[in-house]
Image 1 (spheres, helix red, strand yellow):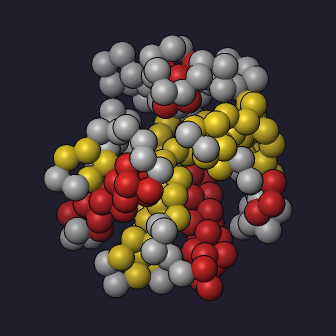
Image 2 (tube, helix red, strand yellow):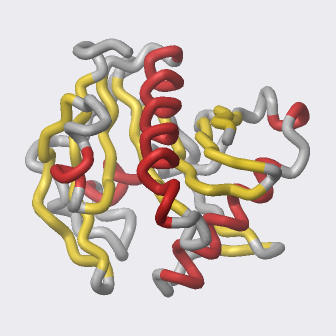
Amino acid sequence: MQTTTLSFANLHNHGELFANLLRARKQSFIVQNRWDLPEALGMEYDQYDTPASRWIAVHEFGEILAGIRLTPTTARCGIYTYMIRDAQRGLLDTIPADLLYFEAPVAENIWESSRVFVSHTTPMSIRRRVHALLITEMTKSARDLGATRVLGLIPSNWPRWAPRCGLDMEAAGRVLDFDGYESQCVSINLATNLH
């Protein structure tokens, strides 16, 4: 099993990995969750998949087991910034504007984590390991990018697994229901527990 942080600067070094990640996102979010999201060529994407973002992939033999997208809170592309902030600003009709307890930050040291998934084809016997690898690579990559905090909209079962991953995480918003999938904004402090 491998973890890779993809960027527009290194995509050419990883063959089909980025396309496979977007295909796995389609399977997770459009096929499995039945969310109405943009897709093309069998891949899910949105306005936040820009050169400003990074993508974490846990993979084995070209198969994507899990993934996360990281976007700086300073990003701008037309009217869009990052998903959580844009939802709060009322630009996204599928995410409630009251998803955060505070005003969405814009700071060099804060990045957003979004499009978090573990593939439905990832065997239960290795899911805990895959999840740990995903979080470890996300934490390492975010720190390498200068982040001291990550703001994410993730499944609301995070209190079960955050301590196992050694994350200093706290709720940053109320629990949201997306067609039966409960999610919640969280704030992850990367300045503590360096690993």
